[in-house]
Structure formats: C-alpha cells, structure tokens
Image 1 (cartoon, helix red, strand yellow):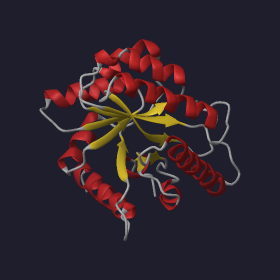
Image 2 (cartoon, helix red, strand yellow; image 1 turned 60 degrees about the horizontal axis):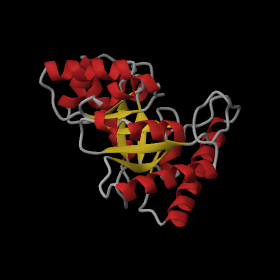
Image 3 (tube, helix red, strand yellow; image 1 turned 120 degrees about the vertical axis):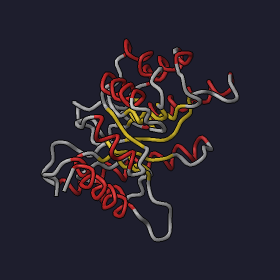
Length: 241
C-alpha cells in the first residue's frame, strides 16, 4: 500500500468515527505538524480541506509550498502558542481561518491591534481554557478571565459592526499527567461545556463552538459534544492503532 492509499483510508476511517446519526458531524482539523507538505497535498487530493499547524514557521513554509504547487483551498487552523513578534507573519498567511490558541487577554488585544496585517476576510478565534489546571499549560484560568475576553470582543464589535476577528468558541486539552486518562479527559471536556453554556447565557451569545479532542481522546470529546477535533497521529502515523 502506498502513502496515498494509506492516508486516504485513514482519513475515511476517521471521518466515519465522527459521523453522528441525528446531528451534524464535528469538523475535523487534520494536524499536519509532524508531516511533510506532501501529506497535506495527498489529503487535499482526497477531498480534505481543514489542516492544523502549531508552529508559525512551519505553517508559512507549508502554505508557500502549496502555492508553488498550485494547491488551492486549504483552510488553515493555527493551534499553537503565538509569540508576539510573529503575529504579523501569522496574520499574513493565506488561508488562515481559525486560531484555536488564544490563551490570554493580552494576546487577544495584540491581535486586534495588528488586524491590518490580516490578509483574509474573517478570522475565527477560540479562547483556550486550562481546564486541567496544570501549570505547564497556557490558557485562561477561569470564568472571570473568559468573561473579560468576551467583554473585549463586544467592545470591538461596538466600534466595528463587522469586525475582522470574531469569537468562534472555546478550546481545551485533556490532562497531561494522569493516572486515569479517560476520567480526567472527560472532566476537562465537561468543564469546557459548562463554561460555554454559562457564557452564552450571561452574554446572550450565539452558540459557541467547542474545540476539544485529539488522536488519543477524541472519542471522549465526541461524547461530550465537541464541534471540532484536532487529529494528527491517528491519520498520519502507521504506528497508531
């Protein structure tokens, strides 16, 4: 079996797992951070469009390579930490449609300050919440911090009736260090859902999307109501079962 066939089968199997009998299936962000641009091209040829990167330099390099090969229509999701000195470079990347890793009000303000660098039409932003409360993880620490971010979005909306950046939803990751992986992952995802419902109620928001679930824990995230899953190894790695 060649690489093209392997990836097409893995993509098909993953999408099958995301199917829901009575509701729309969550979106699949194929995380290509450890894979060459050739794999992105192969999956694009199989019909997939949503891809995720966690390093700005890698994202830019892959997008430039796709342009050279005249591969169009890739929708990029940035899922990694953002250094303030690289914000302009990130915003100038063609195809950038979502950022899943807005981890502080300061970063949110910096993005809005540099909105003029954005080359697209609109950019959906996910607020990253540290639901596992692990010190090594970035993210908003609780409801008050999230509420301050929502207030900031609303203040920007008052200045511009059609802002370039909009609040797409909330993002989290399961616990890293744990003796009970499934339980801790489920608790993290349940917390995110609770914050989503409280924000929607308190601020009269349209339904927020949830970005949660990776290769190892996405079945749990599906059970807890995620709208986007971020999957890499389960598709790209031949060692993943």
